[in-house]
Length: 496
Image (cartoon, rainbow, N blue to C red; front, top):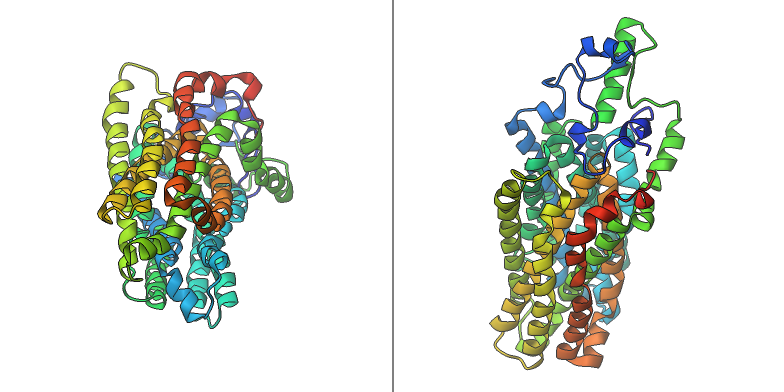
């Protein structure tokens, strides 16, 4: 396995000796300077002991949580920029004098297309040059092109700028887990990931009553504020890059050209980037665990975006909602998301910690909520479809979407924690592989949503989705029973 950092890195000798469940902080215990000589390499540069304050995992809790909170806030804002368009689409289409139904859905999904390509560049670049610089650059570009969206004068201009915004927005989604793997020891990662993921929940359900341009300007204001805060408080956290920089500094200060970190490599930046850019694809295609989880998350995220792109017209058609009231249709899913976050956070903090007092830590300990979520998803879809079909009081289908939202988060959160704990130092690439597939499906499939409902009706249309979700129910149960065997089987080990 090969890792990249500023100036090229090579982690193969270090990581291939380790089981896939080894936390990043345990990949190679920090050595004191007097230990390097005992290791046979007096020129090896490492952390200055296990309490080195320059090691991000030794930063104060206040500093760590400040960074996690900032990344969460950035994620909140980029998610708001994504979902804010869904209930506002009719107003946007009216403003630009366009009534094409497919294009109406495309206005929402074009943002998600940016998530298909962005992570494939963001993950390797972050592992080559560090996470913070990538976050800062894309924050600035996100800010600029959101202004461009807000001042767009025609629909094609708006769509192009939305695509660029989506490309930039893929950064916090891709790197959030990586930041947390850098900063947090294993037992604290689930809680941190819960905070990171709460951003999309809050941002996605902001009231839409102020008009679509005003909401975009609101996104711009928040983006500018967070970009400035990130410049002030977010520093590099990726250990390979930090140690490479430390070795380079010491070579300059001491005049000893032999000083090196364990992550230095003779490979050029181009060679290491070439290897890194295909890492998410290799994980997706050749690591069965990553493939299974990516397919499952792709399914539930496709359903989420399909519902998001159709809520407005369903509730306007069936219940006579106006464009402002249509925002209420998202309330049930949002409450389900928040409940899911509390459930997974409690489970990780209380139940998993209790389990690990008597058993060795395993990523599979986080998966039981996923099994519950797999059952709730089809229940929510059936319930929503048929109550909307017969125009039962509007609160009932909204409650039904709450079951769907809860099931989605119970599936999503354990997968994020599982990938971070399994691929710690490669967390960004693992999450990128997951993000790419779900975004591809989430951007394309919802384009057919309105035609599907027109053909099958709301009842059978959502029942079709529910039947497909039923097929996936065995997946989390199979992972609970056989996940460790598959994950640790030498046949399925991918050279990264």
